[in-house]
Length: 253
Image 1 (cartoon, rainbow, N blue to C red):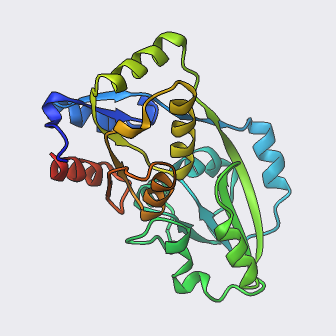
Image 2 (cartoon, rainbow, N blue to C red; image 1 turned 180 degrees about the horizontal axis):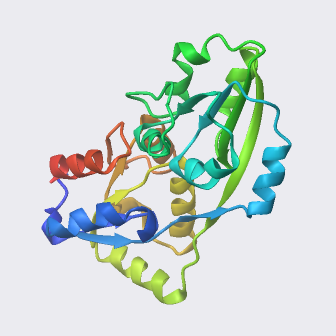
């Protein structure tokens, strides 16, 4: 079934307005209607806690930044000049380069642990010390594979994700929007966000058989969605950046 025209329906954005302000601005400029319903919020650790965590690190041969949040929160506490730097994707790379630092590797496609692990920089890492800068939750695939390759891996945890809080009025509003088929698309950028989104919808008795099309950046997320919603419609962009999302919306319209 072809989704209704975008100018007739809204686009559900599952990130906070702070973290997707540019996308929202562009959508509005295109006379489209974004509806912000954040699922997770980023809570940076305190300065003292980050300093303690950094002090406990061994000297690192390679730093791997898992997100732009990891860069933004941690960079002022780290000595990065004499180590190699890896970024999980172009947005993270851009944040690092704005600090005047060189990024030794960032995938041009497949912005994920799998994409990182394919590069030669992380192939021969026996006895090298690798620090992964990340949030408290998330997959451990990167760490486990690097350990299997003989690296000494340490995690620098600098933030945690917490479920966004929604008052009863907001829950009732979004429940009514789903009941009225108000949304044409849902933008979801991680499995963790989808799992929490699904939990909220189930808890509030939203009919999961009439969901809009999901706009997602990886096949892994599509598989996670279809494991819970077998008839889910998904457009996979293979890129989490705004332009890829906008292109997907244009294709689906």
